Image 1 (cartoon, rainbow, N blue to C red):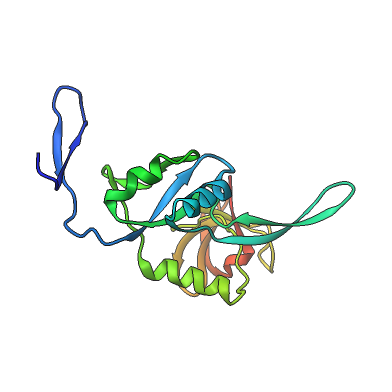
Image 2 (cartoon, one colour):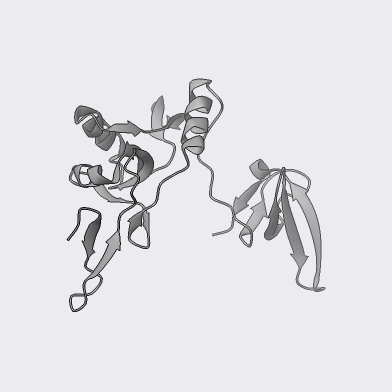
Length: 187
């Protein structure tokens, strides 16, 4: 077996070979972690001199007797890691790392520009916090503004979200554009 091939145990009866990319330069990948292990995984990666990025945001949490500002992972369950594919086993061997996000059994690299933009925004103290992932076709509820309380479906996303609001009783719909901050997914 050549160095550019790796055994893929798709089924026990018929092992298949797939070719690794010739490019071995480090790229960004998302490492999926055990729940609430992001900070520990990032510390371990730094200890093993593995380049990683764990974006954090500040959140104030309230308890009955006190308030505290915490730094929490922006993407719960993920740490970004910059490695060559040959180094993925070093990452997967760390306690708390579950897997590297993959498609068709191949680690899926992230665009460099997205990671750099995120880093740049955090360095410049941009207001960044998690938000539910909204995609076209997702049912949402408007929670503030003049259309508060109305539910609809996201049909377009550009500068603002275009949401189709339907009145089932009369079987009619209207389209309205709303700010992303004014809507939330319906569970």
